[in-house]
Length: 272
Image (cartoon, rainbow, N blue to C red):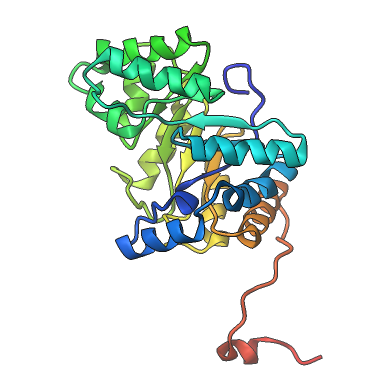
């Protein structure tokens, strides 16, 4: 439960369909060419929705809203949208309110200032959030959406908790490789375990640098029951696979997935 909303433990992410590969410009362009219509994105989100994972995390855009509308029309399942907006002028509260109003108009459930807005406004020297960031959170609440913080900064959690900021959840990077984590993974684990609010972890496979069984086993076995994992995939097959791997970890069983095969593994396969 996050802010009174029943959430799935596994959230569908968006980097791998919106062109943010964390690999190269060439890979970004390939992704954008592959997912050039909302319908192509909707096919992947639909797999998550039909398995009970009816939450999607992304920036707010007409493209994303159209994809979610298509999923809802196909499945009859209402999607929970976690938006992470930025704004034209982060120093202007009016500019931020325009972004918040846009999220509301697009029917977002959650509205978390994106990392580029949040992290410069975490006051680590005084262990709190700046008045400006707290005013941004209030603007979200005033628009009847649920506020939180999208951050790459571990102190966003501790500073927010210390000043009892009006947040319902935190987005934090967490993966076994420590990719984009600002401190060691054991410190991130302690941060998550100690957070006053549920945490939505992101980048569990370190943007493709970890194999799914490895990356998912790490996060599922080191977060709390109230915390969530956000993962993006590039096709419906990957979506099916990460859902099964996640269920297997949560149910403490062996995953029912077919391993990828190459000729070099022939000696590992028993003859029929």
